Amino acid sequence: MRVGMFLNYAGGFREAADEVAELEASGIDLIVVPEAYSFDAVSQLGFLAARTERMRLMSGILQLYTRTPTLTAMTAAGLDYVSDGRFELGIGASGPQVIEGFHGVAYDAPLGRTRELVEVCRQVWRREPVVHQGRHYRIPLPEGEGTGLGKPLKLINHPVRERIPITIAALGAKSVEQTAEIADGWLPMFFHPGRARDVWGEALAAGAARRSADLAPLDVFASPALAITDRPEDVLPLVKPQLALYIGGMGARGKNFYNDLVAGYGFADDAARIQELYLAGRRDEAIAAVPDELVRAISLIGPAAEVAERAQAFADAGVTTLAVAPLARDSRERVALMAGFRRLVG
Image (tube, rainbow, N blue to C red; front, side):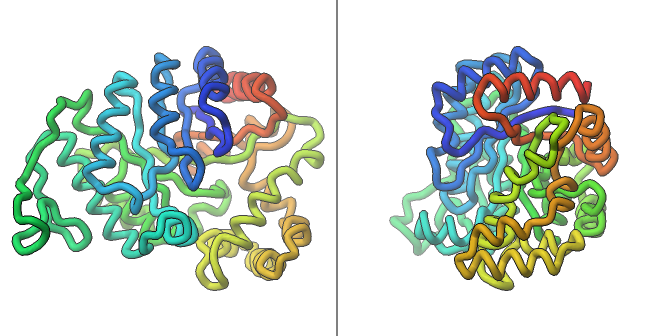
């Protein structure tokens, strides 16, 4: 199993690069750089490529709506070049609050746009003249649109690889099914090893049945919070604010992917209560309403032996990459925690 780490949205490039270099030396396999409405991920990934030699670097995630498919492909090829073939393209739809609220772009047809973007990226990396007449993207623009001067073009440079791994962030059944069909990796959120199959099993199986033989088995990610401690009761509350934010505040009633997911795990009453409190502005109460049982189920928090056992439970549930979020006070503690976890899982 690969062991990786998510960087923090608010981290500084230089400070993060020093830490990542130490993590590479300790044997960590992968660093994931997020992008919501913080600094862009691409700048930091390029900076990290220059400061590392072995570890993989992944975007987590580049949003569908903020770059054209060809720009996404160009960016991925460029990052793969400067990292000597170590880049992995993480993409996703994000959500309407970010896409419409921060970028001013309509949040529409995430499934169709994802499939077309993947097709265009792989066409660009093969250095074929890009011709794509899809429902959502038309390259070149057809006759009667624009100046009429567009013509099929291929990437000038020769990519390091013509098949850069693509990991898709997906939660809904249709999105997960499509991911299992077309992607190299799948990045869900709040993965519950004991109940993930109940929520996503049918979708994964349906997608896998249509999966091309050219694709390797799906790389399944999980991103649990990590803390090795003999006092887990002191650490569990640190995870609850993020859970309350996503379960309660990421979307309106009836349009919250994370609320639906937690309900599918068997916490429907808790999810409804958290959302009710959060949307009413009672955030502290919403945080307090997050059950310890849920936090324990989706996290790696406890004594070393228990964390090792839980990590094995993730592996038994099909997870092949653990890209964790370490709970530590500073860089020194994070590096030590990650190094210890790497030794723990082998």
